[in-house]
Amino acid sequence: VIGIGALLFASPAAAYEHRTSTPSFGVQIGYGRLVAGEDFFVPEYPHGEGVTTPETLDLSDTHTEWGPSAHLEVRFVLARNRALGFGFDDLRYRRKGGYTAEQKEAIPRWAKFTTFHGDYYFYFNRRARITYHIAPFVGIQQRELRYKGSEVATQEFKLLYGSSFGVEYFVQRSFSFELSARIFALRGGGGTNVLAQPALGVHVYVF
Image (cartoon, rainbow, N blue to C red):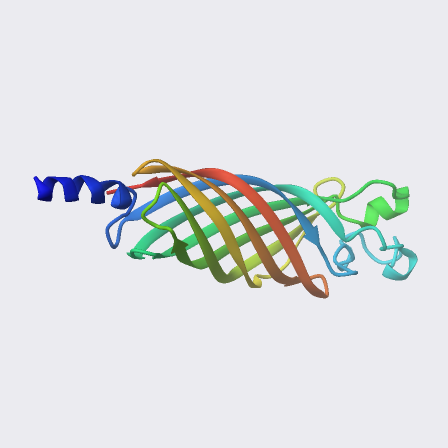
């Protein structure tokens, strides 16, 4: 009787833990903010010389943008409170309005980032239905600037790093809802750009 009582008492606490090497898959959508360097939207123009130059543009209002994001990831449980993850992000930011026709020809309509990164997760309150995590990450990213029409300027892959903070609510042991915020720091456009992306999604654990 004592053994059964102890088992019943312990079960809820460990009900949402997973074995070492358990894989899981997640998807999230979000909407966030880009804070870019001054010349982020002034690459070498694909339109040729003479259309406009950086000196003729007022860039004071071009480097804070908002846009949608999509995130995919796979994780592997390393221990009770740690996991290794691999993530992919598609981040897009539209330029603001209020520019002249000449400026619109030179300034990209969209800035798109494609990222790949490895994440190391630290969990808190891991046995409970609601658990929290922090996950520093490092990886690579590619910036793509889309102009009017079909012209695209693509940058080579560059370093990115950052961290995510999240809370996970387990509906059952194999399925959870996750709310997270990722902070990216990445190179491009003559400086370091910061992306902040709150996101909401689901996570599925495979036993």
